[in-house]
Image (cartoon, rainbow, N blue to C red; front, side, top):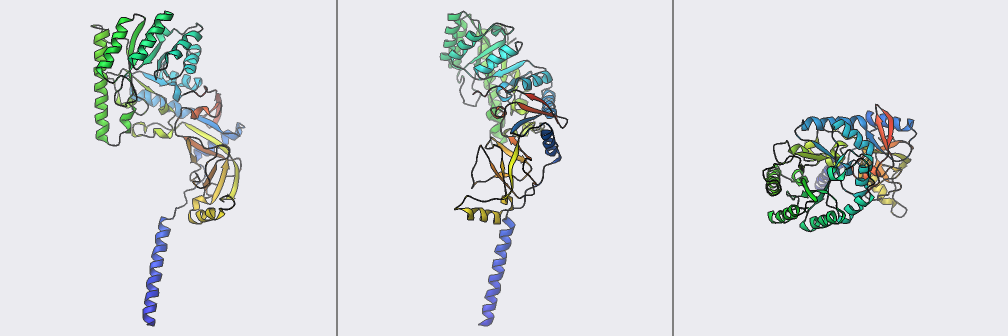
Length: 429
């Protein structure tokens, strides 16, 4: 009996040991480390500039390297149109227009349209979404003369016969010469012309109204890069180009019989898909914006040769504390600290809850238990980050539009120093 008991005890001990070993194998390892050299240098520059509040940082060297890489990739086959909503800052747009040798911009709302027409009178503007006709009426009412000539430099985007008829009535009523571009559905299914019959209705309106000038088409193909299988992506791209070709041919034949497509803008692409257009198809320009600052949502295979150029930097307000849950549920904090070394320390930062993720020092993450805060976000780490009060934490935005505008003037860094401040445009949908 004693032997049997000893044997059972040994088996039990072995089993417990195996369970313990398995638990140790899956237990989270320490992910923390101090700032890399890049972010340590950025921290030093921010301190030297007296910055002590959350700030949006643009690395100008990376920005211009990205711009040059895009120009190299396009290799003169197609002109580039910069998307203003993704780059909502006039000095930022100026830098990129100069580096990429383009004056073509895409705009998505009335305030940006008004500001660009007033402040950058030589640009060529294409609307990126159809706007209510009342917006167009307000633009012409508010236009105060100057260099910008909408009859030559502005294309309104229209998506249905009903909207086109509204624009026709505006042109007639105010005796305006208006250029219109037709939004076509090339597979994204977010609106736009989706049949030859609808296209023909719109062509009939254009043919009957001399104050409306057909300026081209826009077919946004963002869906192509997001499909899960390579075979699906290839087919979607082939289909999108074929649809574009057929609509362009239908419109050109109706509105320019024998005249060709000279002077027309056939816009396609976007940051994830600009490389899919090489000038061999119908598209004769590509649009992009976010890729040039490369937020994390744009970490795609097609953009792997571009570098992140935008970060959020914010100071640590409180450090040197063990992570604790609020009174009454402190045991939960004790349990997670015991299990996961990466939840040992808590750091409360200035602001937070942005559309962004902490990237330096590595190994910081919000607490799923403690919750988020836009005032003092809690970030958990192992302590290996070596953060002290007033040190900086760096976040990488997930997108550029709206995020770049949440921090006041953009802080421009170059050569390890803060060199400029760029005012942003107001946030607008």
